[in-house]
Image (tube, rainbow, N blue to C red; front, side):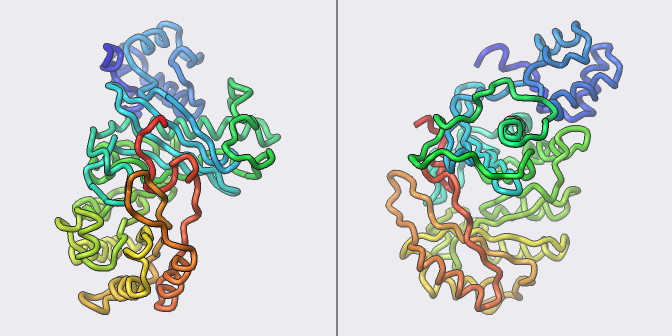
Length: 394
């Protein structure tokens, strides 16, 4: 780690903290609002580019703070350029990944909250690393800023309407970037800006709750990135204290639960966290969350051939959510199951469910009144899909 890596990271600061920093420097408070706007609206990549500030202030910011806490090592593309995986190096050398996915009507970034993960889920590449370290609020925010810049470049390259700030690199996206042998065709998308954030990358957000929540508040600030709370979704393996904290939080962030099994024996074998927070405790917390917030919860379910994808597993899952085999069930109008065909991870002796088994599983749930969809796959060819992030430059 270099001396510069120890300087304050501006992305760690809320606007109020930015004001305190600059007023301590003898600057008027409104300078902080200018800096905040440059960082999150103009997406400036250096204090020296903030030309509405006095040169002396720009130079001091450049010398005494950091605006780029992550070093971009590599970007890989898939799906005709509509999926982009970024590999970042943290101070100290640890690697983390983020994925930008551009759809016809929206753009979503999947960000990491930890380097590695301590949860040890048997189907997840990140879990093989163990926990390397927590990310700071600014390191989380910086991943989203990267995605916002990518979308600004995308809009400039693919939409005739002008954007606020043109890209510096005219060759941001070219046919040479494509991973596929298919004929080149420009992507068709009306998306011109980043619209959604999902905390589903590397790590368990609720194991880094305080830093993650500070990042949420910074990104939600209407004077900055201005990301709506309902445009953010956090996924947890089922850390009950985190679910209970989120239920009373000031911002209505969407909640997704990584479930992946319909009974304790199977879930404990797949997800060690279930030994600490078994299904009864998890569903009790979810039940209280639903009663407190009235907001829908998504249950994520990775399908593994012959392990958790049999018809009896689907029937048991429906019974679990309906409360047929234990405590009172969940309000089904606030429950949604998201089926995820497993994405291969090298070295893992697991199999991906065949499509017919995925559709059968979905049909059984729907017949029992459970809303259920199959997740659209993106980025499998570049190991950017669900469960494949491992902070690798390969």
